[in-house]
Structure formats: C-alpha cells, structure tokens
Image 1: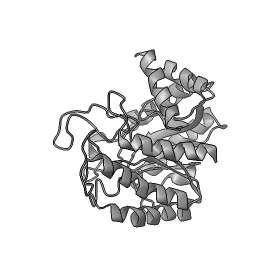
Image 2: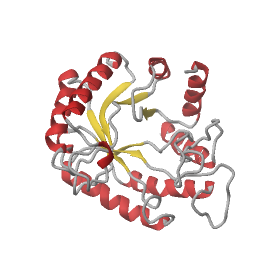
Image 3: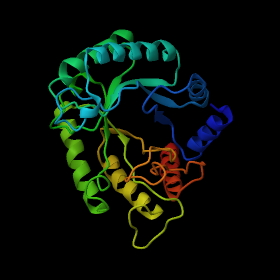
Image 4: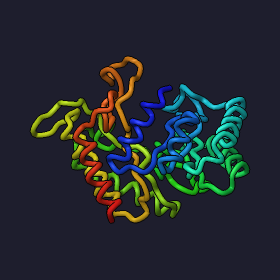
Length: 278
C-alpha cells in the first residue's frame, strides 16, 4: 500500500472530472476511503462476493457454487464492511455482490436474506448489487434500490461491431426500467486497448476503437433519464492470470498500469468536465 500512489490516482480522477467509483470487488483500504472522504468522492462500497451460482453444473457460474457456509460467511462480510466503513461520508451505497447468477431459483431466498441483512445493518443508504444476468432472467432486483449492470456489447459478443451497441443497450435498459422502475447505473463497460496502438479504420484494441466504443454507450446514457451513473471498466490496466484471452493483463483501463492516459482519458475528461460546468 502506497499512499503517494493513492493520491496520484485521486488527482487523475479529479483531472478527468470523475466524482465516484465502486470498490470492485472488495472493500478498499481504510487509507483510500479516508482520501475519498477528503477529496469529495462518492463510493459504492462492495463486499467480496463475485460470480456466485446456486443451481448445478450446467450453470456458467458452476465454479463458485453457493452453500450454507457461504451464506454465513457472506453475512459476516457485510457486517465487517458496514462496521468498518459506516462513518465514512464518501460511502453512498452498499453493493452486496458482483455478477451473481440471479436468474437461478436458488438466488431468490439467498439474496432476499442477504439484502435484508444489509438493510438491518443500515437502513439509511441504498442497497444494490451488480448484474451480469439480463432483465428477463433476473429474480432478485425487486429488493434493491438501484440497478447496477455490467455490459460489454460489441466486445464479448458481436465483437468489434460498434453499430450494434446502441440498439442492444437501449433495448435492454428499457427492459430493466419497465420491469423494476428503478434508477440504473452502468457499473462496467469497456474495451481492451493497447496504449499506442492506432489504426484506421479503427479496429478492436486500438485507442480509437475504445473511444468510439464508449461514445456509443454514452449516446444511450444521455438519452434515458433513469440512467444515473456510468463507471467505465476500468480506471487503469491491471494484471491478471495468464490466459489466451488477455495479453499481460486486462487492458480496459482508461490509464495504463503506469497511470499514463490513453485517448479515452481525454475523451472522458471533455465529457465529464463539461457536465460539471452544466
């Protein structure tokens, strides 16, 4: 933990006009939360509960199946997060999970109990969880205050086809709102981008593509008044395990791992600082 680097990150966030972040996918250090208080950021504080499934081996989430011990531990993690961070003014919302299989029947009693536990701890802040399941299949968001959605149209599906983003995203967001009538935050969207890689016409992994990709999302965000927030994935490139799908880590960062800006940082700076002036 390096406090000087934390301060550098906050300066970069403020430089591009950002005002919030989510602690994906675990509560961050107390030192960083104190910085968020001091610098005036608002934070969605998230417990470490990622990719949970409830049914059988046919689930795409089958590697992280839930049992009774998980429920007990999950509730303890909520209590630990709450008691540590309850007095931070930066904490605006609690997130009880990331990308759980909320289309499965077992998710219904499990998350009803989890969300009730969070409300018993704190009935003053909104509660959310971050979805990868779509609105047709989701069974738990009736108990949430805000819908958070991770979406990567034209990246993990229809790869490279920027023209599909607007139609698919607007269609889905309308479905979420028509089903639950709750505000929506786009909690993840983005495209892996190699700093310094340029090509015309823009193709996937170029800096131009990353900018055009996010701009297609922004058109939909600006069109729908129930879209209340946008969190690109991710602030900076980060290391991951070795694998065929990634070259030396996740490159969806707006900044490189060394905190140098990509073209998208300047695009977001123009967008977000303009909104501050408005």
